[in-house]
Length: 122
Image (cartoon, rainbow, N blue to C red; front, side, top):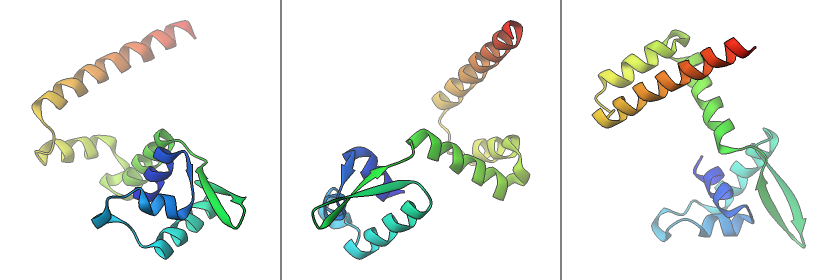
């Protein structure tokens, strides 16, 4: 995920540019980065074009799409597929600040209003 985030941030980049985009003490190994890019390319997350003798990688998916896939996979593998189960576990872990809970409540209310409005129109 860190490598894909670097590709999103850079737009398009060589393996060397991706590796060097990380702070000095946190740089991934060149060969490991190259291997992960190949895996991501096989899965359709990135593509490459040739620039002389080097490959330039670019993202084929948006961050929002990956976020959505990650949540779907998390639910499918955990919490009995229940979003409610995920929510309850998140709240009980004390990992959510009070301000975030208030923001989530507002987002849920706004979401319900949009869905209700769309249903009335359609």
